[in-house]
Image (cartoon, rainbow, N blue to C red; front, side):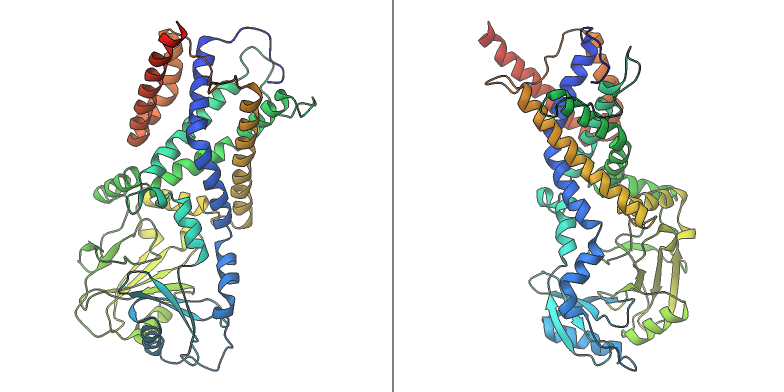
Length: 437
């Protein structure tokens, strides 16, 4: 690094460097994939609108036809059970009725709200593909455990990187690029360090908030908050919340209300009455109306908001009678904090500046990944992985434990993967020792 002395590297420095190398080897490919899909997802609404424009654009008419006609037309067009209705915020956009066919693949039916005609049927929006890859569902199906391991190691990567960057006897750490020849390794080392020190905080924030989507840590936190009364508010009208075990679960409810359904007196669904109640309660579009899966289940109207303060879900029976109006102010303090972190993570909480900061963080991940690969390529010995040599001694090991042990305790799956990495590292050294003798 710029300004470094010729003093030999300490044992603690070398062992932290070794684990920084391994952390990068393990998670950088994942992080670079997350950066691409996350960067694209920042523009999800624009991408989806552009991709669906041939089906989505309608000519506004004097008045809308009955909402029940939307649902009936969608049922025929997609040959399945309607489960949700997405109401747009623009008069020149179609209503989307989400239909669940018997084969299980959900489809969106685009219906002209003014004449009830179907303009087309489409599968999941393009942004859903980005989201599935970004949440690493492709590695775990419905039980996502990989995201917790990757996010935990990403935090370890940043923490060990800060340790390596720390000045230690120099006037200051590297905060600008060297003017040396870019073809030499010091340029790439400085680029890696400068990018990491400026973007590291945002990357840690993204990794920590990404844990909320994990199958172990995220579910445990949600359950703990609910049990302590710090998350989801009490059910309205002296009822109890139920978890939607049927498929699909209601969409658009947010992290706090995810999967929450409410019972209601049995009644025939009158979607026009539900929309009238939403209008009377001044629920602003866009919003999603989740249709009940059984006659004694409430209808939920979820606002598709971009800021945590606008979080809101209405519950009615089939006749439109209001059962509950759940707003942000009713959330527990922990739920508010976590919901805020999710909206900030997705780049919507603070508008354009929020999206720009998150996009820059995505670009920074790629810059660090490329610079790390270039540095490794320039220093690699022939026939070896080129991991920094770990010196013996408890003091050197304590340096790593002081960084990673608290994270391993906080995130159990990260801790288990760390134990596995230590075991593999030990086994590798035992195998190589006789060969070197």
